Length: 244
Length: 273
Image 1 (cartoon, each protein chain N blue to C red):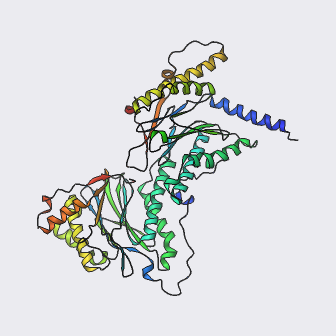
Image 2: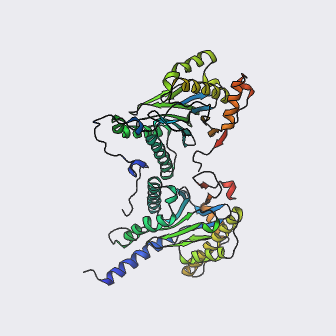
Image 3: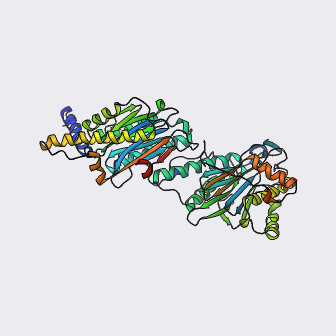
């Protein structure tokens, strides 16, 4: 017999399983700046920031296969819609809200499948910084939308620390400033993660700059959507010299 | 598997072009039904492949449109010049543009030139049932910068999808037949197009187009509306605007040598909005 109790238990177990795996994820930060939108993260070996459509990009933390599945499903939806109707009809709200979130929720609720391990950040560029949009999508299909900036991290503590760091600024930055704010926010987030771990390990030692430590094993990956380009495709990966 | 996605990057698995079931023709289809583009020319010059086309579109005996654009960039290294049925050709060009973009975004690598040529063949094959009924036949000429071999390439197609690579030049459309021999005449008397600079090649193409317009009623010349010209090069797509074309035409009228006018082609984004 399958009782409501079992259902709750099953969901809780699945959430716990996913959260545990997300914890180690290097956070992703999105910032809207004067000339475009920035997605910023630290990668190990594989690319993490991807173009979805002309005016949309995506990055996620989690299991690589799940990150890829959502990326490809998003690209499929966007291109199908962009060709059959028009590129103007492809919006981040339709993409996340209708095409990606419902199947994610279904998969999460299905006790016979392995849950998707993923927390994703989608970004869409608008005509002005106020019109830029970010959607954060969770493994259970929940999503939220944001303007100015958005974060996707491995735990609440990490996300809170990053949000706090980013919310300290009220102006629309330029790219250089956005990059340094993103660095600062990742640093704060990783410090928040260390905090988590230290609690568990009962007071580990203060281990220097969290960002520098992360960069020993990985490197910064950043991409932008450009606001004032004649191209339909606004996406561009930033080169190492632009990032540093 | 919670998500269905198309792992091969094949855009045609995702969308299908409208393919109406066409009844077997009991009487011939009215020629005024299907708007046609007329003459397009592609020649290899020193730095790439130059495409020149008149801007007329006709339906039967009527001139439907005098400002049609028949040279369409598919991406930064591919141009397609279209002749024949406008409706189908423009739709196929739109399909191919999306298909190349879709492939490179989903597969995280650009589609190879061979891959792009197969896509074009598939599109023509798919169009065959309609072409056999007498409507929607189109004949593209594909010009590409071959990134792997660092050279320009020209491919002509027939309506069944056969691919013919041209070594120096190609032309399609109703005005192309009368000027076929003229390409050889130019090559033999003035040297190969591949050794010409942009302005010399452009001048020869404008002459060819003018002859086509003289000999083919459906081809627009340049008396009223200037033709369009684009080139595909290592650096991307170059556009020659009306002022540049006018400068070359003025110089021809004044009997000046081609070197006296320096044509400035502007690089344009293949997917400019």
